[in-house]
Each structure stands twice: as C-alpha cells, then as structure tokens.
Length: 335
Image (tube, rainbow, N blue to C red):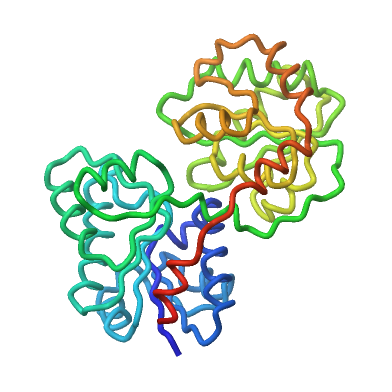
C-alpha cells in the first residue's frame, strides 16, 4: 500500500480546484493499492465526495503525522505558490512542501502555475524548496521559464482537467453565463453582456453559473437582475451544483473562469470567453473562440457571428488533442 498525501486549495468548493482533485484522485485509484489523504478546509465534504481520508488543513498536528506516515506528498494543482493573494498563501503551501522534504518523502509539484512571486522572500523560499522536489510539473510556459531560469528541472503539462471524463450530451436550448468577482470587473461589462444575451438569445433559457459561492453568487444574482430589467420575460436560473453535467447540456456558454471554458470545449459547446486573466486569453486563442475584454469594447455583433460560426467538432478535436502526461508521475508513485 502506497500512502499519498495531497495538499491544495481543497474543501472550499471552488469548481476548478475540486475538478482537479477529482481527476487526481481517480487517477491515483486507478493505480491500485493507494491510500489517499487530502488536506482540506471541509473534511466531511472532501471525504464523502472523493471517498478518501481527509485532514483539516490547519490541524498541523494531524498534517505533520499524515506527512510522516506517507510515502508521497503531492502539492497542487492550481496556483498555490504565489504571493498576489497574500504572503500567507505561499508560506502555508511552502511549509507543507518543506515538511515533506524534511521527512524525506517523495514530493511532487503537480500541474501548478508558479507565481507571480513579487516578494524576494517568496522567491527565495519557493526556489530553494522546488529544487529539492522529486518531480515538478507546471501547467504553463511562463512557470516553466521561471523555474529553468532558477536552474530547476520541470516538465510542462497541460491542465489536468483535460483528463476529466466528460460526455458530450444532447444539447438543450440553453445559454450559460459564468461570471466571477474580479478587481477589473465593471458595470459596463455586465450591462453590455446582458444586452447581448437579451438581444440575441431572448428565446432561450439563461443558466447563470456560480462556480464558487463565496466569490460568484452575489455577482450572478446582480447579473440576473440586470438581465431581467432589460427583458422581464426571459427565463433564468442560477446554477450552483452539478456543474459539469449542466454545462454539458448547454448550446452556448459565455464564461470567465478557465475551467468552465475548458469543460465546455470538451463538450463541443459554442463558447465565448471573457478575458480576466492571461490564461483565459491563451486558451481562447488556442481554441479559436471569441474573446470579450473586461471593458467590453468589442463589436458584439461580430462576437455573435464568431460564436455562431464555431463548429462543435472543431472544438472537440481541440480538446481531445490535449492529453495529460502521467508517465513520470506514475513511475514515481509506484516505484
């Protein structure tokens, strides 16, 4: 039995992070004879959802004991090692990695985006920890370039969500809108997006997706109000769970979050991205889907034509062309 501990942004019910954990846990279980413990903010939710052991992420007595008893520590995925959110974030995740190294465990950095690391202290900590890890995999070229500049060997992998088992469902006559709170979000974007939906999709039901209640729900309610003001007759629903299944049945999606867009592409759904982050811009460019900026200055008639002209088979081909490489990961786990 190989004992694996997993550290990440888990238990906060953020769709992207939970989807990554689902892919990671399912893959580990496929290797057989793997005992999994996840450090989580909500141990009941994590243990029941994934059928794994769970330990409170700040219960350091149990965290230390779990790492001591484990063979492998996995840190990731996501953007854990960054100090933009706060210095506390990079210190916490670095501490977990440091404990794994201290106890001489195999430590895997799993499909992470490294940085931004603006503080010299953050850079010093992360550089000196990662050079001692057993395997470092990153999900973007910027992270890869940073680590190579530091003299750290790392492998570039695609996002683990490309490995998510998603079935392309028969499409309902529904357009999805997925929004998240962000510092550059403004009323002009909400108004122009609502106007776009009301003008072009008034005959369709609008499902408004909240992928993390603490960040998304109030904004989704606000957008629904704007939409109803423009067209009181339009049918709307705010969706907070069964996200993958609900996205898979859409005819169209306009979305901010990277993983919402990615899931839609895997289902061959005509998708328009909202460019709140460079990773979204890059995905839109790679998949050749329309992109709306945060100030919404685009010609929305052109956006609509681009959206209509998308071919579902082209989107599926793009998504299926990406394959997560588990080879080095598996060799380290079962060796």
